[in-house]
Image (cartoon, helix red, strand yellow):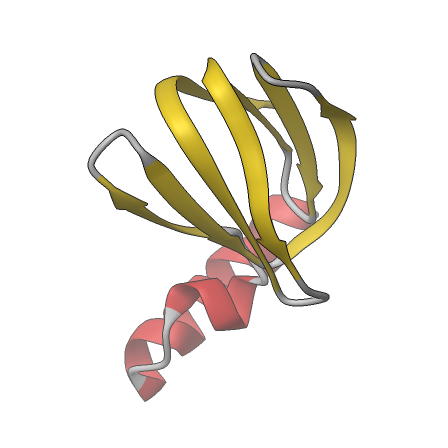
Length: 92
């Protein structure tokens, strides 16, 4: 059932030319090299230290690993992380 709803939302997004992350409420990530990442459409932070950040989203969990990771800014809409980013994993 969820797949049917998602595919309908994806089709609506394409037909109306709306951004997919808005229609699907999916996380949107913008990277500046491997030093900074801005994450939009998140639900909360599950784990945070200088080597691992786990973030809950509406679709899955994100696990970001790296070195000297630091939350530079956090609002209800976005999180900005900085440090040296090694990996980004999408966990179901």
